[in-house]
Length: 304
Image (cartoon, rainbow, N blue to C red; front, side, top):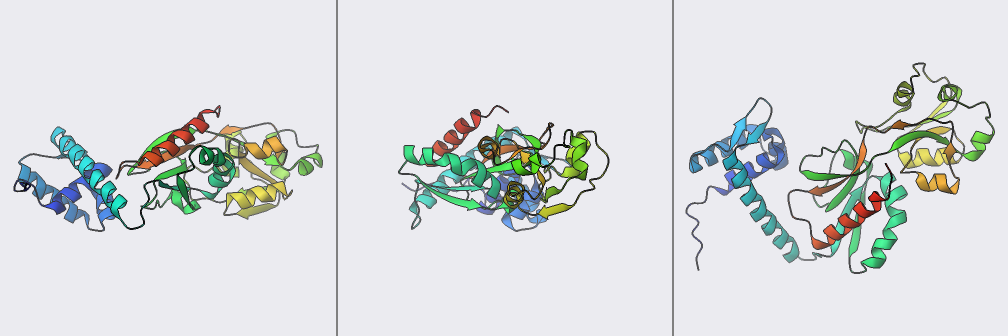
């Protein structure tokens, strides 16, 4: 039986509308589709003229779906998601039981890797593929099925679920701490060797921010070591290079084993949290849903 496609609008208009509706932004839709914002606006207007109704309420820097727009976007999203899923399953070499997982290096190394063996034992037919890079915080890759990142929770195009928050404490090796009995309060750290970790993450906590939250406005006076990778800074602290800021839930295993100890009492709540992200552009596969549920169960065991 032939499909009556005469009422269908131009496909380019539907694609442009779907991207703008999903992002709630003409600018972000244009960036995703690699066209200009004017081109997206033209396609949306063409679609509105074809349908005879407004699909967006337009504001200065954003758009909001009208009730008619919500109805169309829901149908489009479901249809395009099913088409995309079918294409992925038909593609040569595709494997619906493979899940591509993305995270930062620190989260994968310190939190995920120690726990994932239990998932593998329970699900031997699911293959996990890891994409691990600190740049994922700013640039997510299209082929990621599930991502865990630290931040504010607002990644466009992804449905985010808060797994857990964290506290930030100053930590050092037991040897470093034993050699410095004079360290008793946070202000005493101003004279110590501090390990700094640089990050472009806007919710990242640095030593100046930590000191300010503790009510200390003086600048540190001790020698500093600076790294652009959290794992390198952590290893430097374990090797007694100095004191670093530790995200308590992330470094819990090192605290339990005694590789690291609190340098002094005192903690501040982290500005960000650890979020699980699922792309909104396609439905999650059954394997992805299993892994997502397992990660959420693991996270529930964490107090904060």
